[in-house]
Image 1: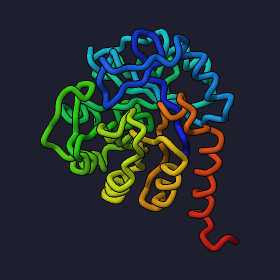
Image 2: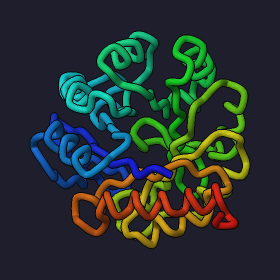
Image 3: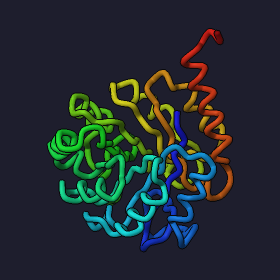
Image 4: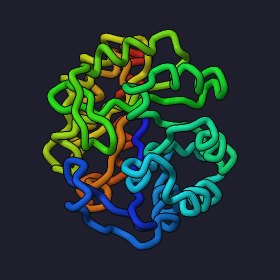
Length: 253
């Protein structure tokens, strides 16, 4: 299980929102590239980006910053979500150095777009499922649906999706703990690796997820907790590695 630092971009700055509300943001740094470099220095194995402006606009709004982060992170995978609504946008991100494209809104509204992306860019597509009480939300979490995260995830079982990022919106940015039960239930319901997101705030959350690795949980995205210092990245990754080792060798041989 890998611990993935999150860098949320708004107006070119590194911010964190509470429950996805654009008006409830905290600016943590004016230089997202320096932030990415800091996480790499502490041992990050992947970086998670969100173009918050793009999620609402439906097209990239922080492309220059994203490209600069990819350059600074050469050799370490970078994934991004927010505003990827066309093949052209997807191609431009891959050309900039992005490794994984996270598709959220169109995964619900145009699932065939995900199928097409998987055919065009095999191994580079992740589906982002952001849920309120188990139901998928879209358009920067501004709209709710009547589709469950589990049913939508199952739609992509044979599409070639590399992973699913599952975010419990009610926990996101609130420092109230990850929703391990819902994350593990989703991972159990599909054969696609699941990355936990939303509410990961202490090492106890890493431990909780670590106890469910056998369900198919592949990683955990951590945001506010890293910036506020309630989780140390290197310590969290060491803890996660321990659970991974125990699952690979349960007899301790």
